[in-house]
Amino acid sequence: MTPPSTAVAQQSIPAAGPSSALRRTGSLGERAGSIWTLGVLLLLVAAFCVAAPNFHTKAAWVATGLAATEVMLLAVGEAFVVINRGIDLSVGANLGLSGMVSGYVMSTMLSLPQPLVLAIGLVVAIAVGTSAGLVNGIVITRLNITPFVATLGMMGAATGATQLINNGQELSSLPSDIFQIGNNAVAGGWIPIPVLVVAVVVVAAGYLLHQTRFGQHCFGIGSNPEAAERTGVDVARHTTLVYALAGACAGLAGYLVMAQLAAAAVTAGQTDELSAIAAVVIGGVSLFGGRGTIAAAVIGTLIITVLQTGLVVAQVSSSWQVIAIGVVLVIAVFADQQRLRLARRR
Amino acid sequence: MSNDQAPVLETRGLGKRYGSLVALDEVNLTLRQGEVLALVGDNGAGKSTLLKLLSGNIEPSAGQILVNGERQAFRRPTDATAVGIATVYQDLALAPDLDVTGNLFLGRELRHRRGVRRWLRALDRGEMRRQADLALQRVHVRVPDITRECSSLSGGQRQAVAIARAITWCQHVLLLDEPTAALGVEQQREVLNLISSVRAEGVSVILVSHQLPHVMEIADRIAVLRRGRLAALTDKDAVTVERLVALITGLEGEPDGNAPSAATRDRKALA
Image (cartoon, rainbow over all chains, first blue to last red; front, side, top):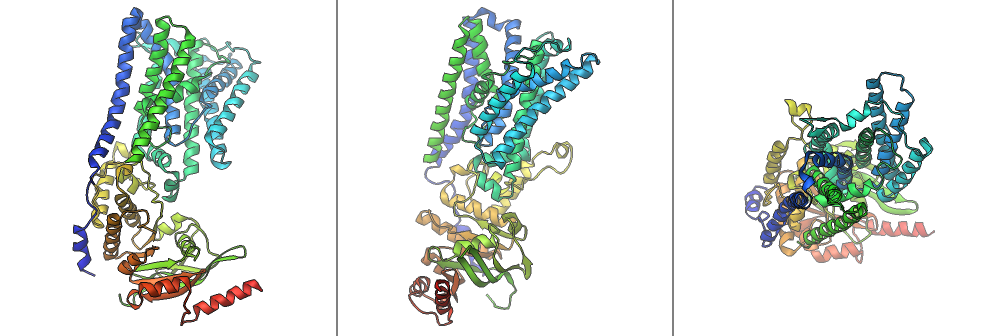
């Protein structure tokens, strides 16, 4: 039994084969991808600064920041879901429902001290969002409904429920201080409170995705669910938690949007799922699962938001914004497919 | 290979039925420490059923599985890995987007054990990389870069990573399902070399393969399955490829009487 070990050592699997140069450009190309999206973002900012002189003012900066918070929270949750090889179409409707339920609960306790009511409202919003996400996860993993259909159903249910709560009316009998949460800014008025909150969430989400077992399992499941299952990862449980996490982000977003308007709007979050999915895909998260970063979701969101507010500042009709996002989304998915096709060919 | 070593893995009267269909019937096998036992047979002979039973993917309808002399009841694949039986599936079961280290540790990621990072439940990537390096060295596998995604590796390298992962977590038994299928000639050679270096490490291997020349080259003993029954169990040196083909197809009667009994069973089933 002794001879094999040395003989085998020499005949071991050879290092990089003939196509190794090609593979290296592949990984280089991927790194260039995130630099590329960052470049697009900077280019957009520069372009709008030239096209619209107001764009680099404090007011425009704050407006862009506030506008970004809504989509960024949804995009962060969506990034986990998409990397886990899923999709969540219900995040926008979930945002609206969470805000409306939270607002309704707060409107029934206006006689209590304001800080307490505001805290209860926050807990309710996150709880509603998380619950809707949990239902998504359970329907997907236990009833084996595809994520697309399950979350499309949830989108309809949540939209309807939002209208039922206040008879389809906007709800504005909220504690008056909520406006301060949504609009006060720190650092000399440059950083609104919602932006600060979202920054904390982004850092925590980045840590969760890239530095913990939970995040690693997202990549494992998204890359090959069967392989993850065989190695002992509880895929159903993990996937359920991922949708619950996306729901929690939507709940927090619902609260912050309500705080900015000082009202719970029936239309809050409408078509936000389009922006959120577009944001993660534009940033470079693969719709096929297994690939992506939180940084991608952040850059993607900023590209979309700058595009939106930039077009507003440049006085382009708001209908063009939605069209622009749709077009950019399709281009980003096309690029993703090309990348995967190239990777498969290797 | 002395015969007095205790069997690492043993099946006693192992059987699996699906309704009236007998997929596997009364299989008695022993796997000795550090041997390669090849499992051959035609399609539908029961090879994959046997492998699924041993890897805990399905539960037997009859008989027992013993690991190091102790009876085991596997309900799921993780039960089998817990007692040291690892399976490398035909379709590899690697996560192509994870790097080599990520794949070796998928489902068993290491975390920091002290300080703030322990409290934050942070992954210990440095330690995982170090251990991954050692694990690959142990089976003499060289991959260009363990931080490289598995999708960028060749088929042979991926198979090597899958085998390295299996034996990293399972010290006793390695089940290989068609490990050389879908590989080029050179890569098949690499995998065969890898199997012998795994054996040299003292790991026992059950190898399912259609490629009889490979079986003849690498196996110590060969078990032939035919219609769910063990048709023959022989030392490699005692058979030729021609004889193996005859045993697999059943075109030649078996001296130990297994083939006639299979025929008897068929007659019973018809009655």
